[in-house]
Length: 128
Ligand code: AMP
Image 1 (cartoon, rainbow, N blue to C red):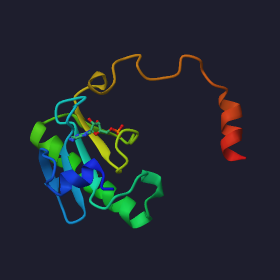
Image 2: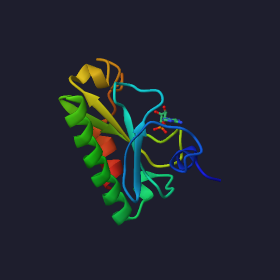
Image 3: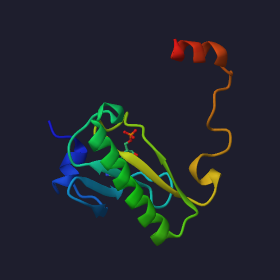
Image 4: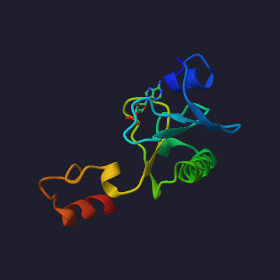
């Protein structure tokens, strides 16, 4: 079954497109965290970013770089932050977030664990 983002690419669901090339598409997030919040997606359906083949993964990040530079240029922000989540829509997408200061992206105190985990044990788990 096509994802909601494939339907957007096909023009079956409206969106505010800001950029596209042969293999990628960029449009404004419908529930923006900041002004200019943009999603960059591959036209081919991939569920999980790190399952993508190397060429598709690299091409997606180069597309995101192009769109980030476009946003920075046109919106005049200090830097474009980026994140990948993907729990809501199972079609890989890179969030681009134009910002002028840290608090535009994340309110102070909203990130970070309350109880600090055992970093020594964690590093051992990951490296063993
Ligand atoms: P996530 O999968 O958690 O990275 O979040 C999916 C993102 O897609 C959210 O920020 C939504 O606001 C956005 N989104 C979902 N449907 C649409 C749509 N039809 N047009 C634009 N953005 C959308």
